Structures are given as C-alpha cells and as structure tokens.
Image (cartoon, rainbow, N blue to C red; front, side, top):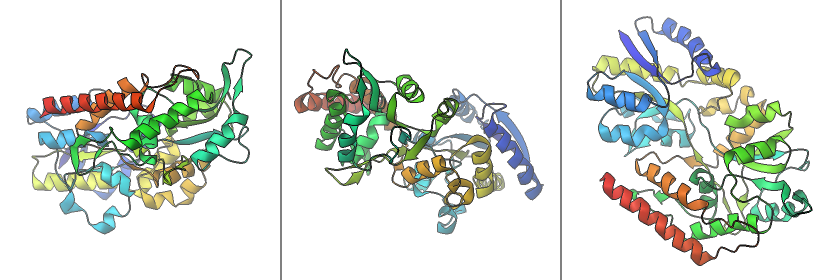
Length: 394
C-alpha cells in the first residue's frame, strides 16, 4: 500500500530533518506501507489540496494548521477520526491541542506541536521576576520605563503589537470576554463590557507612557532584542532573534487580571495532520497509523530537540527533555492556562475586522484620550463588519 503525504516543511529545515528521522522508524514498524512524500508551499498548500480534492486526486494525508479544520470539514475534504481514538489515546495530548482539531463534535486531525503567546521578559531589567497580576505590572512600570529629554520612550515597560487581534485576545479573555459564542460560531461576542475594559487597560499603558503607540511586531522584536523593552508578549518563533542578541530572558505566563481574577489566556494553535475523505477503509486506517506515529512522544521529542517545536504531547511536556529548557517550560506553563484557536471559517473575519479596528482605537500619544464610548462605538462597528461577512459566507 502506498500513502501520498503532502508536507509543508521548508526543505532543509530542522523540522524537515526531524521528520525524515522519524520516517525511518515508521517504515520499519509498518513495512507494508510505502510513503510518497510531496512538499508543497505553506502559502498554497490549502488551496492546492482543495483543488486536488475537487478533482478526486487528493493525497491521503496533509499537514497544516488547525485553523483549516472548519473550512475543510465544511467542504467535505477530510475524514473524522473518532473511531480510531479513545480517551486514553487522547489523554496523551494537551486538551487545547485536541480542541484545535475538534469541530462539530468530531475529531478531524492530530496535533504535532503547539504554539502561542506568553510573557517574555529581560532578566537584567527584572532580576526578581515578572509581574503575576496586572496590578503588579502597573506598579512596576514606572521604574522600568525610561524616556529621553523630549519625552520619547527609550526603554518601554512592555511592548506588544497594537494592530492584531491575535495579541488582543489574551486581554479580552482575562477581562472575562470571548471572541465568539462557543456554542454558536456565527455569534461574535466582541461588543461587550469585557472587551471595552480590556481595550481601556491596553490604552492606559499608552496614556501612562509605559508603551509606545502603534507598535507592530518588528518594533516589538527590535526593542526587546536591543534591551529597550523590559517585557514583550510574543511566541517561540522569535527565540532565535533573542538568542542572537545574547539576551538573558525568561518566559512566564501572562499576568492575571486583577479586577477579574482571570488569567490572560492566549489562543493556542497547532500544526498537525489531516486524513483525506473518500479513501478506501484500509487506506484510511493506514493513514491514521501514520499521523499517530508522527505525533507520538518520540517524534515530538525529535522536533523539539532539533527545531525547538513545542510539543502537543503532554507526556513529553513532563519529561526532562522539556523541563531542562526553562524557555520551553515557561511556554508550556502558559499553554496550560490557554484555550484552543477557534477553527471555524468565521474566525478569519474576526481577525480582519479587529486588525483594522485596534490601531484606530489606540491613543496616538499620552495626551489623547479614548473614552469608553469611543471604544464601544468601534466594537459595534467590528461586530457589524463580522456579521455582514458571515452573511456573505452563508
């Protein structure tokens, strides 16, 4: 039997190296399964797969992000995996990672890794560790922030992008809000008191002079790498930059919101494996054997050791492979407090609408005041934009 597998690893990458090392073990364990491996660009792989599926020429297995799930399910291009798993099998993975691939009550893929945001801090500026609550954050910021004679921020207390919903979601959840109704993915919940409070807190950091206005990802990364930011909110994908800068940094969960007692909970995404629909039963069963092998503890250990990918496998997270890495341990501590990435098509509309909105509702300087009414008006517009987009998707 031959399985065709579409990969999105960059050729020559350390992830691809780890994958190839795992291939040898799989072929030894399953000598009757032959693999036809094809590498596709991550930017076109989803559309390539949809085109192939419509022509009845889809591969047996495809690797991709969990947020494809809703779209691929809606099109009928992937097969549910519930009959191949039980609670013992699923308990080996972080619940949020399994939720990433769960849609309409069914499991549609297996997670190979996880990724998400956490608090990254400069140990030289925070020798006693980072804040654990938002009240502590606000009390620490005055001594951590430095300004020039003209009042420009030269060292920021904290920096994170203002133009992305992805970086706003932790504040939203910490203040008690949600992006969508979890039981109704067509009902956005961004027009809420919690959403207003979360944006007002973010704006306070700007108005009080602790964070520069209109920060983007590149600004955040460069400020932290140069030692000009005490804390940032970022993910493991930028660790290479900080290591190159020879920074002494730590990773910790984001602060608990003092007014609610709730942790800031970023969304946790996953890369993983899907099995195409419409294949013969024996082929589908073999495809499941493949994706179970390539998400097992040993493969994820190789991916972490060679490429630094954070494991979705909860067993590995408690091993010395991970606990010997303070950075990885910090990200996984945050992951335990985080939630899954909404994987239904409407989430794309939420990203677009909030990204357009978030910079317009940030004060352009410490002297500009954005009122709660201003924020509420903007959130009304965001929800209206999302609902109109959902209507066009229906």
